[in-house]
Image (cartoon, rainbow, N blue to C red; front, side, top):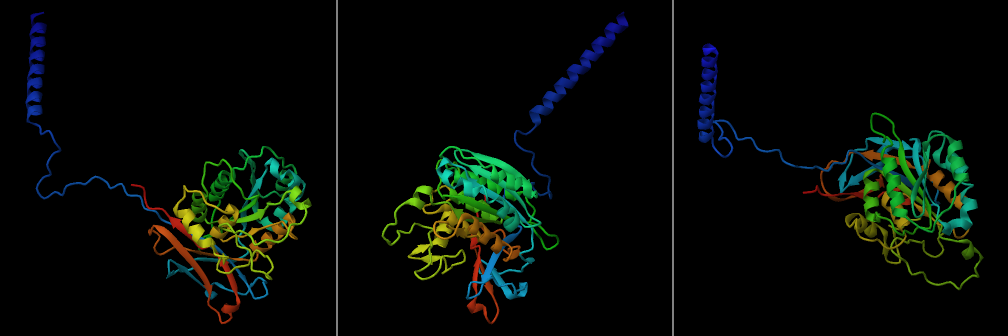
Length: 383
């Protein structure tokens, strides 16, 4: 028993000795970080840097001759592409062959009820004319809400059935929110590179071209669409059954909003008319640049027309001789007859607006009309 007591006292004494030693060391420890040893560099904390880079820029290029016919005889060597004035190396070139990933964005508000029977017949046009044999499509409807009616599928029957059974709902028009959903869906589809084929990302909007109540702003949607290489086309549903049956009014000079670019008198209204995107003082490209620089500000004018110009697409109205079916057919014909050019920008880190210019370097280039996307915007990194 005495041995056990003596052993316990020895253990207790050893514990007290260790506690006193630890206290002495704690008192001698510096309160700040340990100074570096001589000759050893001070380790710096990692910098919180966010670099904005664009891995690939793809632009659709539509080329027509003086008669308005599509030109199919060009090769990659016939094009010159500049990004902010610097010539770029084309890494992928195609003429209407890359398969299409299509989002059909259709207004389902009660406002277009008179046009619903005509819209329900368009499914076969989307599958046969726009998608083609290798394409895929998804359908998104919008009114007060945004509804994914059909996810991406290559089944023509599913797309045609979805369009044939299209219903209408409230009078809401959350166009920008629906466009944002479409861009997000297309971002998941693979893009073409120099090493492997991919898909062209296309959104086709059937709408009156108005927005009410969206949380997103148009500039925000356009910026994302440009960075995701999404091409936007529009079929304007700006006419209602009442307007079709209304008495003709005397002709008046239109009060052009931003983004409205009709052709001059005597020139037929076609989806390929271009005069540097200017008419009557309306500068569509200036509006595009302003919109993607001020993404939280409201943009005036026809938003679908502006989105089409910002991404290299086209907006087709349907209020005169062109029906909804004819408009979709024209868009499909253009998609399968246009060039696709891709490049990796040399100054991919440069923030701000990047202007894209595409030109044809052939002797007959002056007789050709070219339409391509005008550029894209890179936001500076967040601090």
